[in-house]
Each structure stands twice: as C-alpha cells, then as structure tokens.
Length: 261
Image (cartoon, rainbow, N blue to C red):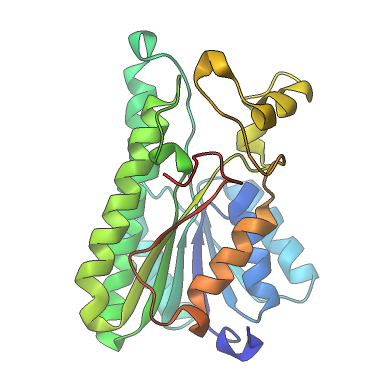
C-alpha cells in the first residue's frame, strides 16, 4: 500500500482508548492519518492520545458515549469543524458481557446492544451524512466471528455483532451510489483485554486453540491466537485504494475457527 493513499486523511475511530481500537489508531496514524479518537473512558483516552503524539502522530481525543445519539452528533460535528472532512470511519468500540441465557441480566443485554449495535448506527449515520455530501469515504465495522457461529454463553454478544454486520452491509448498499464503501471485519479469538477477561489463566489459551468439545467449539485450525496486527492490516486494506471495488464484504479473521462459515 502506498502511504500517500492515507496520508492526511481524517480517520474517526471508536473504542480507541484500548485494545484493538487503540492498535488500529496507531497503525493508521503511522500511515499519516489524522486520528479523531472516540471513547467513553476519558482518562484512558487522554493517555492513548499522548502516546500517539509522543510518537509524532497527529491525534485528538473526543470523549463520548456512542450509545448517546446526541453526544455522537456533537462529536462528529466538532471533528468536521476542528480537523476537517472525515474520510475514514472505524467502528471499533465493543461490549462483551458473557453469561447463560436463562440467568442473563437484562441490563447486560441492553448494554451489549447499545454499544455493539446502536453505537455503530449512531456514528455511521452521523459520519455518512457528511461523506454523502462529498461522494467519498470508507467505513469499516469491527464485528466478530461470534456473529457467524452460535457460542455458549455469548448470546448477547453474538446477536449484537450479527446485527452490526448486517447493518453495515445494508449501509454499504445504500451508500454505494455515493462512492462510499462499507465493509466488515469479523475477528475470532484475538489477544486483547476482551479475550483475556474470559480466561482464568494462560492455560485457557490452549483450550481456545485446541477447542472445547463440551462447548461445541472446534478450536483454531491455524493453531494460534490472533493479534491486533492481524486485524489492523485488514483495516489498512479496506481503507486503501487496494480495495476500491470492494464493499459490503465481511472478512473473517479467525484462523479458521468458524470453518469458513
């Protein structure tokens, strides 16, 4: 990829205060993008922005809860006014609250859908309105392979991610006439804080790789946990000219864990 394809472009990234979102922000910044980082964790977001600036990257913090439509609209308006026209949107924020369905708390269900679905809708809608005026843009939603395959204890997460995936495809269909591409990346088990919160110790990594028959999980055929770099490389592809004729595509990056389904 030619660095000039991204250099100077304004990139909005949600969930940028940690995990995959933070890594994606850094990778885009390294290619010259101007980062507008959104996260509800104001303190952690400030730390991440300082780290990016310390490396010579251009980045600004925009703390906001993306489940709040009004807050999102205010933030996107501020980004357009202060940084310039938004070229790239990465829907990177995510919520994982596992638990069995018969005992699942309604609050956890509501929070899961507020963050994983409504948040994607709010930010995508606000950003796309500006992109439509300019007839250009690239939107990438970080979903999950849990939206492809049933998982025990993951009903809210899987259902909300499946909804985010289909929303992004519908968005891509509607925005194609405006030269705006919308694609999805569906990671599997990736070495982030979100994954490690499911583990009791490092031995659980072996269980993830080798599979768990009692939970109907086949494991990872490539025999390794994914890394944030694996995901960020796909993001760079989708926002570059290399994918200029690709939209509404869902790229599953899980080492074969969902067997291509």
